[in-house]
Length: 244
Image (cartoon, rainbow, N blue to C red; front, side):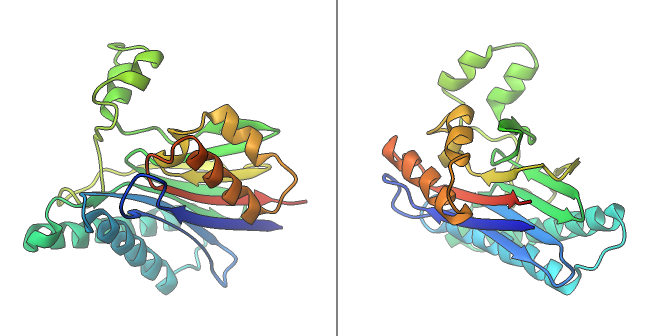
C-alpha cells in the first residue's frame, strides 16, 4: 500500500513561488511524481515549471497502460521532449517569457520499479532501512568540477558558481535527460527542489521523515523546518511512502 503527499511553498524570501510538485495515480495503478523548480525571474519560472508539468501530465493521461519498462521510458522521453519544445518555443517567441526554464525530477512507478528522469538539480532520494541515499545526480557546474577533481566536496558548498546549472528544461531546443531505473524503495521515495536540501542536510531530512506522522504531516514538517532555517528559496516536495 502506498501513501503520498506533495506541496510547494514560496519560502520566506522570494516574491513568487516558481516551484511546482505533483503526484498523479492512474487507473492502471501506476504513479507519476514530479518536482520542478522554475527559473527566469518575474513570472517566467512559474510559467516554465507549471507549463512543463501540465504537458507531461497530459501526455501520461492519454497513455498510462504499459507492459514494459522500455515502453515507459520511451513515453517519458517523448513527454519531456514535447514539454521542452513547447516551453522553449514560448521563450523564444514571446519576450515576456524570454530565457525561462525549469528543472525537472520525475519518477514513474510501475509495479515495483521506479523510472527516474532528471534535468537540473532537483533531487530524488531513496530512503530505506532508515538510510537516505541520493539517486539523482545534480547537473550543476560545481558537480562537474567535483567529478573532475578540481574542487572538494566542501568547496562545493561555498563556490561562487554553486547555483549554475549545466542543464535545464526549456532553455534550448534540444534536451539531455538522465534516465535511471531502480527498485521501488522499501520505505520512502522523496523528490524535492534545492529549496529543501540547501536548508537542511540529508541527515536532517532523513531524521525528520522518520517521525510517526502522516505523509502529509511529514511534508509540512520538512517545509516548516526549511523555512525556520531561513526559507531562502521556494520549496517543493513530493513524498511517497510504502506501507506494509
